[in-house]
Length: 172
Image (cartoon, rainbow, N blue to C red):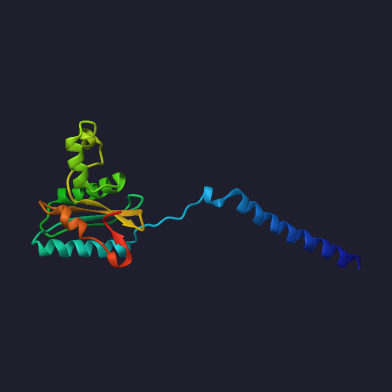
């Protein structure tokens, strides 16, 4: 009987302790410390690059393409046949600029040129004020970016890299 009493007391203490722990977790607000976010995947990066490449081919252009995830990490970096290595680095920097400013680089270029307060943006080491970088959005969330490096039509080609059927767009 004495053992049974001890077991009952131990079980109630254990169950009470479990409830207290759950209450503490929700009371502290895990959301204050952890957030869930959307991020571009490698599969999406490959598909976006394929769509941009197809658009470039239709325009008879050879391009370099960079796709970054939401943190600015390179998911994909490719250089088209015969495209200079400087275009590959430009594509990466265009993607980075679009991601970090949340703005199409063509629009950023135009705004910077017309505003004396922002005309020196091109002096920041990673930013590049050339067209061809676009942010990639999903449900209003910035999830990555794409940059296209070539001689012309970069903006048009970069904007074609969308998966509208699942909600990935180059506009917010």
